[in-house]
Structure formats: structure tokens, C-alpha cells
Length: 329
Ligand SMILES: [Zn+2]
Image 1 (cartoon, protein in one colour):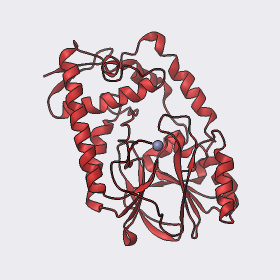
Image 2 (tube, protein in one colour):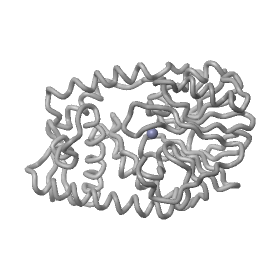
Image 3 (tube, rainbow, N blue to C red):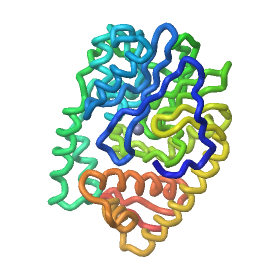
Image 4 (cartoon, rainbow, N blue to C red):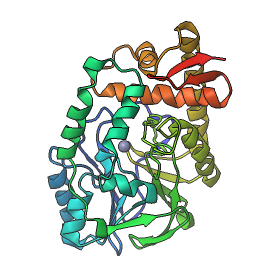
């Protein structure tokens, strides 16, 4: 874990437990939260990887609970590290799975693979590297338990949810994922923030397929920064994030995050000016020369997020050729 950007908190609120579950991803372990009051709620039960199921079971046992005692499962967003075990747990518990509406098709694996590969090809990745994607998606599939559609409850922004003995307000904010779900408890000024707010890193604006967009993808970082205003306005006293320790001082985090993205956008603008109409792949190589394998998609996501900001500001234009290229205005 990198150095936190904001003050972290050692003590968790009463009747909330946090433990880490392993993932194979560069981000490291994922946080799973237990909200112990009725209905006992598990937020982000991790993925079917290493000893995560055993850890989850052991953590429930520490408070005298069994998987069958769980009354609700919450998935903040449909990234494998957060939800791979959700189907398993919901089945054992006979419990519903709450997720932001736009995440539901991803939880149910209703993705258009052809469109996804069309999008990946538009990045200009060399042909010989494209094999890493099917291999990676195949590996990820092994870490995901199937989810029974009838158990899934689609959550919309503003919904009130009765979970873990408290009334929580759903904040469904696009950014890191299209239907990212955070849970806000106004009476105690506590926020379960998933990956929208993290104490030590800026969440990757992961490229996400959007068949309705001319780019075939969402403008993840533009969405993310727009959503950030809402969290700044809430100014929660306690934030329980998807990775890393609990923290406070969201205003300072938001300021640092905006400054980081401005700097990075400037850096990427300089590369676009220097290179001749680069592709997303060429830009990602320039910014992150040491990245390899599937992580190239994280690098491309980071680059495209900032390219979208530069386009929105009128500093860069897009040539939607094959592959897509970028040029300064
Ligand atoms: Zn995450």
C-alpha cells in the first residue's frame, strides 16, 4: 500500500468489521466489510482466489456467524476482486445481492465479447500482444462464481436500503465503473465508498465498453470527476474504502485527486504533441514504458481517461480511424 494521501483511522465504527481478501491484481488485497446487525450484510466478498473463501468463513466464525446467517450481500462494482465470491455466498446464505443497476449485466456475464475486442483493437495494440486478453479473461472466469439472476437486486441512485441494522442511502455514481455503488449513512456521516474514494491511490478509470458511444466506451474519468463533486459535498467523517484503511478528510483527497489528474493530463498532452498522431497504445508506452501483459489495459485506461479530459477541454482531437489516433488542436 502506498503512503495515504489523507489521515487514516484505526478504529472502525461499532458493529462494522473489515478484513482483507487476496487478489492477484496489482492493487493488492480487497476490503470486505461485515455489517453485523440484522440483516447481517457482507460488502464486497472478494473473489474465488487463494484462501479468500476460507478467510471469509473464518471471519464470519469469529463473530459467531456462518455463511447461512448472512442476510444480504452488497457488490460495490462488478470488478472481479470485489464480487467473484458473491454468487457463492448468496447461494449459501439464500440472500439477495445488491448492486448498481449498470453493474448487473456484468455480474451476469452478459457482455458483448465481439464489441469488446473491436474496442481493444481500436487502441492500436500490436497484433502479437492481443493474445493476452482472451487468456486473461479466461483466467478471470475461474475466479468468479456464477450468480443466480433471481438473487440480484438492481440499485438506483437515491434508493434507501435497510442493511446491517442501519438505513443506508445508495449513491450510484459512474466513474471507476458505470454503476458504482457507495453506501451513505447520513446519521453517522459514514460512507462505504467502494473504489470511488481510496486513501492512497487514484482509482484507475478502467476502460468500459459502451455500445451506444461513438468511442465504444464510456468516458470513465470525465464521469469520475463529475461524481467526485458529490462526495466532496457530503464531506463524510469516516470513509470505508474498497482497498486500504478507513480514512477521513475527503476534501483534501478530492483536491489532491484533481491536481493529480491535471498534472497527468498535461503530461499526456505533451506526449500527444511530441508523437505523431499516436494511438492509445503508443501513448501508454510513452507514459508507462515498463508495463507488460494484461496490465497494458490499465495503462491504456489511465491514458484514455486523460485524453477524454483533454478532448473535453478542446485541447485534443480524436481521429476515429482504425486504430483511433489523437492529435493536438
Ligand atoms: Zn477494487
